[in-house]
Image (cartoon, rainbow, N blue to C red; front, top):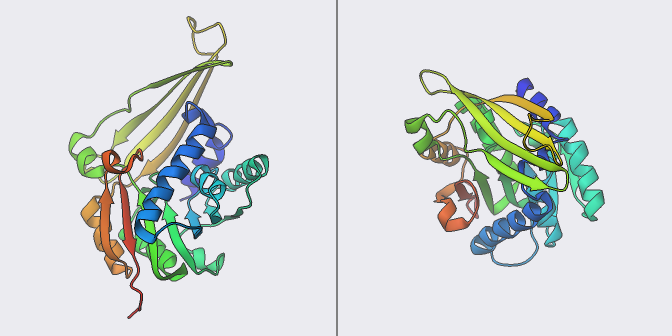
Length: 264
């Protein structure tokens, strides 16, 4: 996963540019995830592990709502920025550089919630790696603990094989930026390469060529819902349940699964 670490190392300083207002996104994503957690486990502060936290979008939002949050990511630069953002916002979060296939070497648990959001699981290229990650996460959860993940809608995307995402245009005091991705699929659909583009114009120069063009590249291995359900069951979870964006309000499909109260 070295190319994945490089991708997020390079992107970390610019990651907030993918949003119209990143601070607002921290708040609303935290609120959406909390609603999902409350529906599953009732209200109140929880001990949460955010594995694959990036620069901290959801971790910062949940910590701001009173949860005890720990976060990990493969990218040292992303974790360094997450720490800076936590300090800026006055959030107490334990951030650690860690691969989510070996999490038990960095955290002791038990956590009530463990989550891997923002399509991070499809960076893993095999069922063996996915099973290792899910088993590590399960080992850190308390009995009855909940796993929460989000991935793209690969059941649809594997049929459509889109070449690009819809460009998003953001205007602010610093000018205009256009954000989009270009996707190059393998012929068999087993993987696709992503080029993340961020085109920036200085204020007042929106009718000219971009003042800055940023491109970052990484790979994903699509996971269908049925395949991930099977891997979750194999890791000891029960009752995988999917929430589509129109149900949850989150921008990607969410899957939840729970460990039994008494482990076999």
